[in-house]
Length: 406
Image (tube, rainbow, N blue to C red):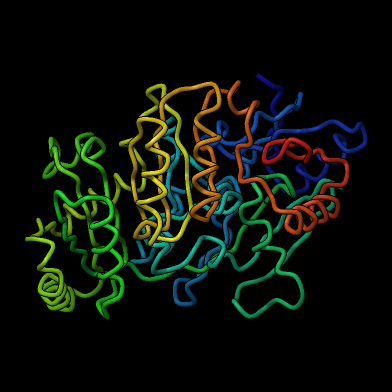
């Protein structure tokens, strides 16, 4: 285990980074450490965690704005929001259970640093779309601020959104400001059993094409459905395709019946009420049906229309299970343990069908041997290297985590 530095304030963070920069010492950046196993292993003798930088620094429910220090647990944020009938609309996923850790420990800074979004992203947008502003310290040990408390506050390069998805390789976030939205009054879910992958994608895409405000669409293969702990679905041996509706109770009742009529060709769905829906989508959010059982886990972003054929192309080379989110725009692949995590076959399928793939779970030796994040095309590589040079010219922050030479 590396020596761990634990700044409690932004000035402590700046001072620690200045000492590291002066000596040219690389550092691994952590929040709660729940996603430490994602990416290439970081070759750094020191780790720095923002876990002590906690607390909600601003919350204006009427303005739908919150600011929090980067190390504030996401669970604390969501409890505070729920008490005021509000939520994070992008529904951040929790990788903890899939990586062998606990659920509910990730920090709000890490959520934005990794740009983590859940099932509602297809309707509401990504995490970065709700990030209004950030404070942080870069690799030069400089404190910086970007953005503010409203959406239209940026001229030039949007630094806040540029940092989202950088996985701690450009800066250490100390505070984030973000937009929130009201919680829906009611939730209902239609679950269609026993559809093939291509029919499921057809159903999900058709539901999103209707004017009924569908806020989530997922499809689980039979083996994954059998792993559900959900009280009403546990032990299910068929594939499951779920469609979520959220709004006022009266509105949901009307839209649910209209949607069932339009989708009647796909069979009669099971119906989940509010409590059952919350439990089901909670499992989807935690990916708890992907336990760390010696397999590898890939996250593939593609076009829904080609998702089933992409999965079929990989399946020709290995046994796998697939979970489709965003109507197939996001596919999680559980592949057997191997020396390269099936990297050649996954990336070949992605190159043929379009999209990009990230290896989320694999042994450290595998993550050292293969490209974990999607290889960059030359134009994007130049931009990425330019950003790295501007924010972290000595390559001190999470060196090699995303790409071996950065």
